[in-house]
Image (cartoon, rainbow, N blue to C red; front, side):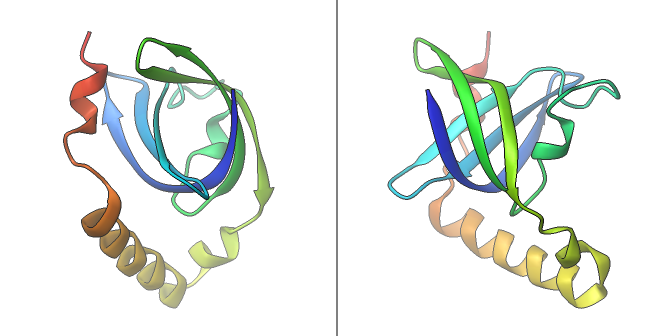
Length: 110
């Protein structure tokens, strides 16, 4: 399965994994990115707030896991200034309060 969307939230899960919320046109897809925090992870540059990505997943039950992906637009300019960081933090907080279900991390408990 492939989805295109904006990364709106990520939470640490286990040692090197993240649980990520991807805002698509029609829904929020929550997925696990295994080993993403390791230095040699191939998709490491995908998971940062407000990254516009195309990601491929495999699905097991209700769980999605990231296989591969690519950045469609470079938002690093937002992170290069104080105003950009402030904007990202503000928008992230609003989106998290409005659309992200805080209990989604419970889905991935093994």
